[in-house]
Amino acid sequence: MRRLAALAVALVTFAALPSTASAYYVEYYRDNLFLGLAYHRVGCLTDWTTIQSTQEYDGFTTFDYCTAGTSSNSVPSGEWFDWNYVAGSTLSAAKSSLDNVGNQANTCYATPNYAARSNVCSYNVLMDCNSDCWMENFSSRQGWTVDTASGCWGAPPVASVNGISCDK
Image (cartoon, rainbow, N blue to C red):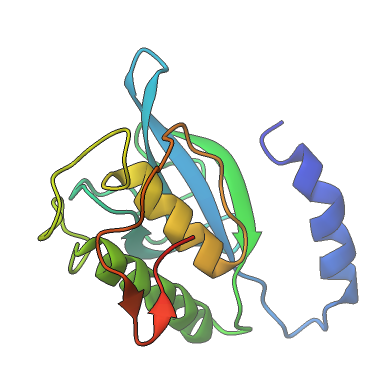
C-alpha cells in the first residue's frame, strides 16, 4: 500500500528506460516520536528496493536510519510516507546530487555534517529551527516538498547558500 500511487509512474518510467540505466529515489520515512503527534523525518537513497547509502538525509539528529544493502522497508522505527526521483543515472551521481542538496540544507540550518543541533538557533517546533523545517528545505531543493506537521514560520536561520536563498 505504501507505494501504490507511485507504482504506475514507476512502471511507466521503467518501461521507458534502457536496460542498462538505473533509477534512484529518495524515499522518505517518519519515526513516531510522540503519540503520532511528533515525527522525525528522514530520507534514504534507494533503488526502490534496496537502500544504496548509509547517508541519511535529515537534520537535528545523529540516529542512523539508513543502512546500505538492506531492504528499503528496514528503516528502524520508520514508516514510509513519500518519495521522489533523484537526478543521476549512476549511484555516484545520484548520491552526489543528494549530498549537494543535503549540504545546502545543512548550511541553511547551520547543522554541519547533519549535526543534532544548529550552531545558530535553538530548536523550536513552531518557528523555523527544527527537523521538519530542515526536511521541507531539503525536499524542496530536491524537487518535491514533503508534508510535515510544523508551521515553519519565519525564515531559516541562514539567509542564503552560495547566493541561493534559504527561504522556501
